[in-house]
Image 1 (tube, rainbow, N blue to C red):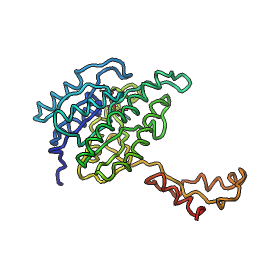
Image 2 (cartoon, rainbow, N blue to C red; image 1 turned 60 degrees about the horizontal axis):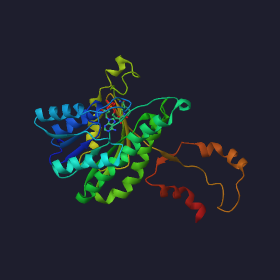
Image 3 (cartoon, rainbow, N blue to C red; image 1 turned 120 degrees about the vertical axis):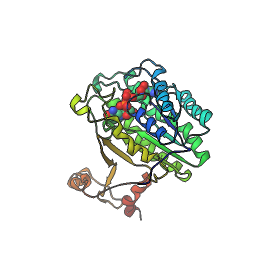
Image 4 (cartoon, helix red, strand yellow; image 1 turned 180 degrees about the vertical axis):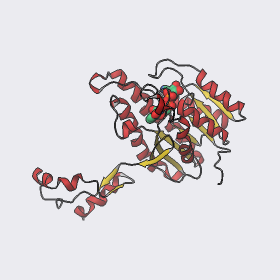
Length: 302
Ligand code: NAI
């Protein structure tokens, strides 16, 4: 088995002071990457801040013979994102790998959700993905190389009770990926999304201990590291994982049905009478871009 390494590569991992992000940072450094360990510190709901979490991981990496620097900026602001990328450029000259991992939770059922709870979660996960990725991709483009990871969640991909804010943000990053992958393809920048599962501060009170102990953060590391490697040629894909299980998930398009001729009015009753075909997911495929939908609509336009 040929070893996958990151010698000469510079990686930024956000929210790497704890949980899954810490594991990415440690393994990337172990395999030769120079790592920026970003973490704002603070509580699970995003309140507060501190330097100790990132510092401890940097120390761990250095003690093991690796190279790392800490950064304590907030991913949710443009200044923060730019400063995180500047830390990498100042310390190591570039950014090759970005793992957008930082995250918070403010769970509330939809009808009880406050504007502040909505904004805080969208800010860290969705706006944060923009604020860090844009400056990082600027540097990657200069070097004609990059590997970007967005972190989604089953909450966004499929739904979880009490997490409309988090789910919206977590599916939002898939939206960023879908378009960004097209915009950066010619610079050898690959953009993929993962939805991890792990027993961490974020999930310790929702996953029972017996199950949680088996959902160790480390099991999310190898697939993310493959997506961060030079070997990775995939872009625009989403993978779900946990406990040693790994699989792909995708927004797929059904075959649908052409009812009209692009001129004739189509009454609602005709939709009802064809709804089984419209609703069917029997023959589905993921599309590579929005314009691919015209392969279905196309026959009507010819
Ligand atoms: P965690 O709470 O252990 O770690 C998240 C880290 O992000 C913390 O150290 C925190 O200080 C940092 N952080 C929070 N806001 C920040 C900000 N504005 N700027 C910089 N750093 C910030 O959580 P965990 O479980 O390791 O989660 C990592 C990622 O995986 C998150 O994006 C989370 O939403 C996602 N995820 C986790 C799942 C799980 O089962 N643990 C499931 C699905 C997604």
